[in-house]
Image (cartoon, rainbow, N blue to C red):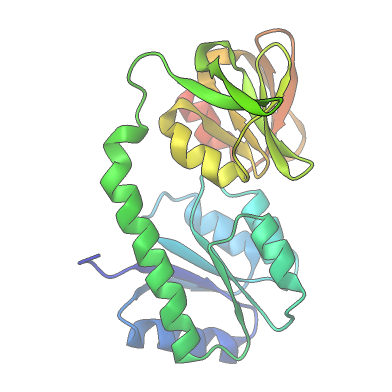
Length: 242
């Protein structure tokens, strides 16, 4: 990328926060926010400011880094920062781009930034292709092969049991391994409902308020799904509800 990556840093320990921000700046990034907890991250993102990646400490008071990802208003590349190697598994279950062990070194950070920049260039290169353009079908597993399912017959996608499942009158196992992979291919044909849910907006037939800012969304066929507080504004915007 020719432009500097715009990154947000969230870490409750001031020394670690300042140190990571300094390393990022020295590596050519623009640090757009230095925050100390999860609620502050969600509030900042809710303002709609542009950011290319989030560097989140996993252990923060109130909202952990994992909690923040669950409530993100839209998908972002996320790098988790942790003092514990065992958290790496959880990080990648959340479709994290990478994770960094404390104390973060400049060399390890450089590898992470290279991965972020490569991902940003890939998305930019295929951005036009992610927009809906006529009928679309996607593969689901059928015995030893695959069959193609019409997107127009699909209501939503869920990540469950280490697989992405499509709901098109029945539950079908797709060939995608993560929801992030499905989202990258489907693009604007879907909207994020929470960290494990993608919804086809045209399949929504009703919406009502849920608890704590969440939404209850009724889909064609009578299925009802819950949208997280963080994703609710994006879903309402896609539905023309404000």
